[in-house]
Each structure stands twice: as C-alpha cells, then as structure tokens.
Image (cartoon, rainbow, N blue to C red):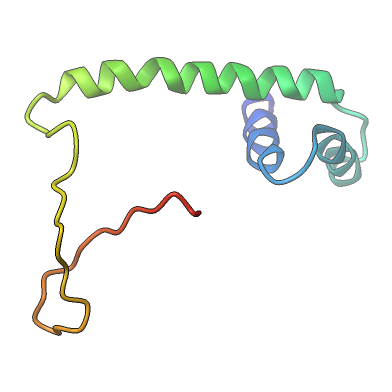
Length: 91
C-alpha cells in the first residue's frame, strides 16, 4: 500500500497543494493518512531517486547523442516533409 500511496501522492502533488492531497486521500480512503509534511518528504525523496538515475542512464548509452539535431528551417506546409519534434519553453 505504501508504494501505491506514494505514487498517488506524487501524481496529485503536482496538481494540488499537499494539504489538498491529504484531504483527498482521507476522503478516498476514509482514514486520515499522511500529513502534508510527510507527503512533501515522499515527493522530495522520489525526486532525488529519479535524479540519481539520470546520470547512470545517460552514461550507459553513449551511442545516443547528448542533444537532438536542430533544424533551423522547417517547411510547415509541405505534406511530404518529415515529422519533427518541436520543443518550447512555454513562454
């Protein structure tokens, strides 16, 4: 149950405050579960775990380029044009 609770907490904590997630968990389960400080600790611990995996994974596959190829010109209206991945910073 702890792993499922942590996953639920991490997912919803990106969308709501820790206090709101605690209230949602209590409403769903019928029991007062973790406090908002405990939930914050779970989210931070998971973020550290994921962050520590990234360097190992990126060093493991040296055949993959570090950065994607940048195409300065893309013909948006050409139906024969190759599909591209567009990255933006949402500004």
